[in-house]
Length: 412
Ligand SMILES: O=P(O)(O)OC[C@H](O)CO
Image 1: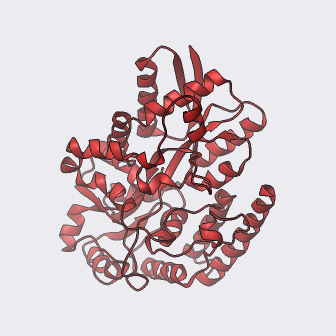
Image 2: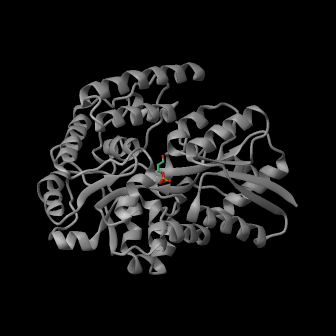
Image 3: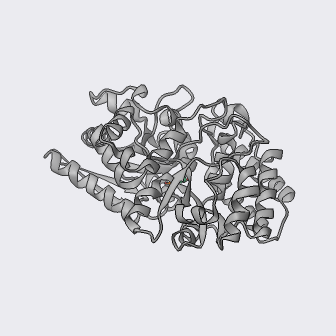
């Protein structure tokens, strides 16, 4: 029996599902055994994986989130492209089996898939159905509608209208994709490493200025950088609309909330576009680490085959809310009536399948995890009144471009 390890960042109910999938793989055959190990947050898992690689103690599989993709893809010799791993081990691979929204996010500039899409998500708008009914409003399609109709009505009905769980992911990266705006030079970073971030744009600054107005008007509350800090007030029924991950759907269902909830697409600014586009995929993918024996690589390939089978993908999607990453799994979910039973479960994948544009394929920026840290710091300062939107975005632009230039040097 060949043993392999899988380091991941899936805590709580998500971790239980990961363990179940590993147990099912182990029970399905007698040649390979996989052991999943929870390593903490996405950031902690990536840091642990890089440190382990340097020490020659890397796991066979490392889960890396969207923000870390460029760093790990750019770390030469650290990973085996998943496409090579599968074909070298006699397994078929066709990039067109994957839904279009996930196809290229973890691919290199030649469209070769490097990371195996696993838990792909999208930020969506969850809402308290009872609260909206009480306020006499429907879920807002645009931010204009939110600020002029939805939020005042919800406030009058006794609610804080809005919270969200990840300012860099939801109000930054996906702000750019939802409005088809360029996020970085070099085709969002895919076509070169001398990339500059385009975050200091009038559209996003107008958005953050509006957010600070909503905060003043009591329409929006920011409970800190922590994911759960912003989700909890929604679960408690204090906040009526929460922007979070489609991957939180399964967890919310299991919580048996004291109100009915549903979900729909992220709003957009009509002043910016009349044709809103798809969002970027979020979540993470699995990288096969280099430096392992041929037997272990074979085991990793076999596990990837198992994991991306329509049945396992559907089980994962159904239990968690992460989107099915293959067309076959999506079809299976439809055929099984999953979306007739839970229409909100389809929002993530539908939003990823909306018409795309030149800027919606993804973004590729090295040291982006550190760039997010800069954003989180500056956004926190905006929302606590320590700085203003103009100054904060200039600072983010300057610091991000320094990080990008430093990463560029590691690539030449
Ligand atoms: O909460 P997740 O797993 O959907 O991930 C959200 C973001 O993409 C993380 O960078």
